[in-house]
Image (cartoon, rainbow, N blue to C red; front, side, top):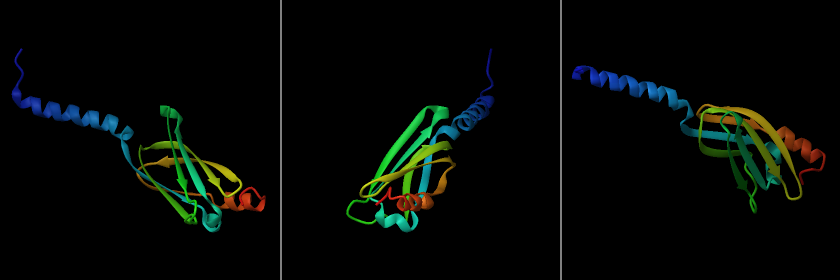
Amino acid sequence: MKVDRRLLLPLFATVALGLYFLFAPRLPKDQVVEVVLGDAAPKVTEVRLSYDDPAHDWSSEVDLSFAGKPAPRVVHHESHMPDGDYKLSIDVSGHDHGTHVERNVSLRGGTTSVDVSEAITTALGQGALR
């Protein structure tokens, strides 16, 4: 059986494109998550972000410390993760105590903003974050 060489390149290109479109959604991409702390930011000493993707049994965690300087009103975290739906756990700590917030986020490349300022203000009102 003889294969026409003129068909090899288009066949190879078609297979390569098919594989790309099959696996591209799970390839890591640049993702930016903004956590809005709001007016309570000066009382925040640390923010811990935990990303959990139960559909693919994958998780990641990062600690952002602001000891010795005030936290910004909006905390930016840049990462390299696949697009997808994640459970984002946010632990915000002050000098004595902290608060925990969970959000479902959909990362599709680009920037995703999560506002936790109300949860921090509530925790301050209850004395949980000093």
